[in-house]
Image (cartoon, rainbow, N blue to C red):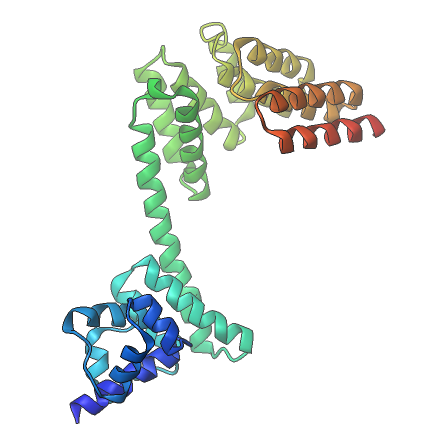
Amino acid sequence: MIENVFFENLKKYRLARNMTQEKAAEKLGVNSQTVSRWECGTTLPDVLILPEIASLYGVTVDDFFKKTSFGYDDYAQRLSSVFENSRDPVDFMRCREEFAKQIRNGNMSISDKWQYGWIHMVMMNYCRDVALEWYRKAVDDDPESNPNEYSIACMHRIWMYFLLKREDEIIAECREKVKNSPNDPIHADNLLIALLFAEKTEEAYEFFISVKEKYHNNWHLFIHGGEICEKLGRYDEAEAYYKAAGEAGTYFCDDLDMLANLYNKTGEYEKASECYLKMSEIYLSRGFDVEAERMKCFANEAVKT
């Protein structure tokens, strides 16, 4: 009796995954005749492959031996429970795929709808924790190993805190680091970024003015100083600081990009076009032909404006 239930469940769960015997065999590394014999009860799968079959079908090994498959409204809800237990992104994707079939067919119950939202909420929290963990690992690394990438990592980490509505926490952290390391340009720039995100523009401007001479070779600082001035309508100052960033040597046309945007804002379209053409030349010299062509298009559009 148990064996009959087992064989029936093997077939039922495969069909629930909308999978042919050939496809299941391919995934499991056996031939389709083997899968057919399992489902017909001619032979039994090796005990060592049972976890693989269960994983492929989105169930547990125990499920193969249960007379009643599950007390759920549908298979998507069954997979939702599997994901609840495992919190494994692979199980999330399986569950999401099953719900997606129901969405396409237009037969989502209220229970299906809230569970579909729930699995995404759980996955969102999982992704949040992973993102924070790896941002922390990035900023705990040696800044000197790759200063530009390190600065990008810091900026994205700050952005993440703002997305999580934890801006006060990250601003306080940036202030503390500036206080403890008053001669570190990276911490100064991070505080500028945090103040910019928080729209504390006047405070950001005052801080930038207080440190710009000390860090006159730090192009990141001058790019963000230019952004602050733009927000305050100090366009001449913004232009000067973007150019200062270019003189210090930006990573990849950052100064020209910011200048082009500024000139478009102030209606100086010829100057904007010149910036785009310079960027096109730089991109082309580095082998980025697609980007170079796009900059040419921007240059032409600026002139037409």
